[in-house]
Image (tube, rainbow, N blue to C red; front, side, top):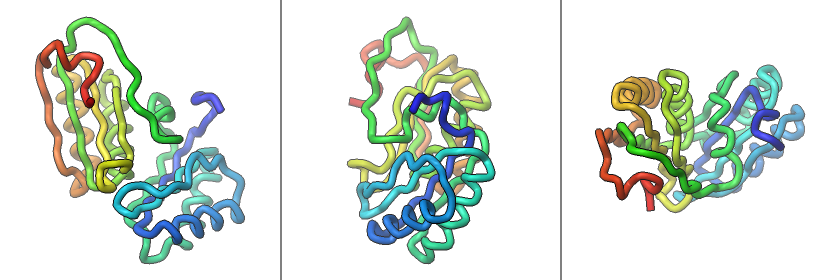
Amino acid sequence: MADEARGPALGLLELSLVARGVVVADAIGKRIEVDMLASRPVSGGKHLVIVAGGVHEVAEAMAAGQGAAGAALVDSLNLAYLDPRLWSFLGEPVHPGEWRGGPVGAVAIVETSTVCGAVHAADAAGKTAPVAVRDMRLAVGISGKAFFTMTGELSDIQAAAAAASEVAGSRLLALEVIASPTPELVGRLIF
């Protein structure tokens, strides 16, 4: 499905048990038709269930999923209008594509304890300032944590980082801003 055809709403459930994650995905599928972007185990013994669709349908799916999750629910996120640039990071795990360009004004790396925290923070950052999300890792190979990187002009990165920090709240583990990064980082922030 093309990214522009997804959504506009995103629902994300993060569970502490893989088996319960499968039950949650089943409960959602039996309750309402939404686009099931992912139902997969990730690092840290967690399970992610990610759905997209209309605002009402995703809200209904989230209600079903949260009801089925019980005590295994680690975090959840229901965004009526996800920043459209983020859809490509949410399906199957992706590795950052090479990006080219001239000098980069600034880079920010935002690391959270939950996937929901990172996606919510990236959404807030992208809606606050004209920054480019360059990479997003959702719990795979990093002990269940998540992070994303973004580039832009320093003032935009600072504004986006402040918004990301506020939305992530207690889920924020680290937020680093690098002004005028070394040219060797351009196009490959995370190796």
